[in-house]
Image (cartoon, rainbow over all chains, first blue to last red):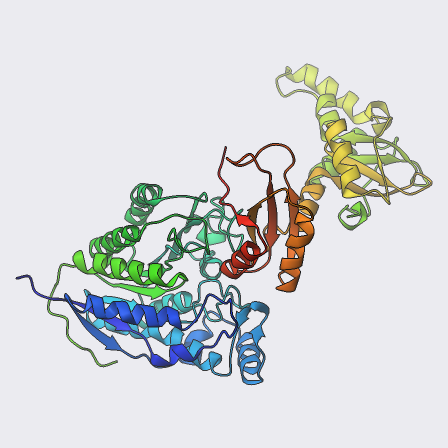
Length: 332
Length: 220
């Protein structure tokens, strides 16, 4: 019998308190409840270690967002407004605190990855982050969890060369904007073509600016794209690009809204594609980064598909794991 | 919708007496490709393009002596000798659609803009027009996406559709109904809407409730 594999699941019960009241808002607490249900399925064959993060310290948030923006965000939440900037970005009284907690998950994941390089780490957070820019909330996102994590990894652990792979159906404009001038952070995003898809950015021609030219790779898919197109893009474009870049660590912006049943995009992925992502990403992590990989949840709004895709992704990560040393619970 | 919001103003101009080397220098230093030619009261007389200048400029492949002679002659030529005197132009009240039609018909890259007494007030390059339509269509603005629904042929389709969007407070910048080209497999026309919201799921459901069938657009 093969030894049990371990998934470190970083999440917080308070994430459910981020309210997006309204009968039709897709970014709802039930998303994480669905993920938590699926964890129990994963626990039948794997060891699951659940960890709760702390709020990210303000200095780490300020590495990506402006102080003025944070003040406006906090004030908007505390004064009872129903949205911030755009009606899409609904919030409640606790949203600011919870967004800090969501940003903290990535940092906790990084601390863990540094102690246990081959740990399989998934951060289930909300609100999501990859559309948030320095001074702008967008697309249900307030703080850019992935970008904050990348800066933290650079500044605290001197891991300078970071690759971010974003397989959410939508382009992560906030991540790209944060790093498009950086020669050290390589942002690779595979998403629905911006002519059709929110937020209307992420054209293939956008490949970085200044010293960061060549450090952004946008792979665009036409509506209706299926698994095969993604798999081809992954093996023919993403893997060779990382071979050249040689990242020290990997951060994954994991969105599950490309699923064919999720009407937030026109993509038509199957659940099994997410297993492919998990396997390939774990292999990339071993090949380039001594296993230092963390994954942070972004989108995914059709609840059954989100749950199934999350399970497949984690199974892919775990299936591919060559356990180097025995993972154990680590105090954060 | 008026070109006056998108033209370059004031336009850099030359007079018929401007020597070609000076006109060439103005074009190169300012990255201009078109210079309106005006008189002392800014009345539009013609236009000169970088192509006109290149044609008059001695070729690099000439032998040295011949090229030297040409250069001397070039230095004495004036804009008035080579400008195009019959100018296609726009009025200050012209719309972007006027400009689009003129650009398409005239096959030129920039149109001078004049007031009611034919004085130059600006210039609209084809790139300015592209920028204008990009803005009007909401392209490149973070936060937009395209929704496509099937036009079922029932009455007041666009009215019903905009009612749905406005009732949900969804801003939109483009509403296009294809005409007579059978854009989907059912042979029905399609309606394209560029909305400024991420709540695609909520909007799709609201449109479906109003009888619209969302469509995943496919390349032909």
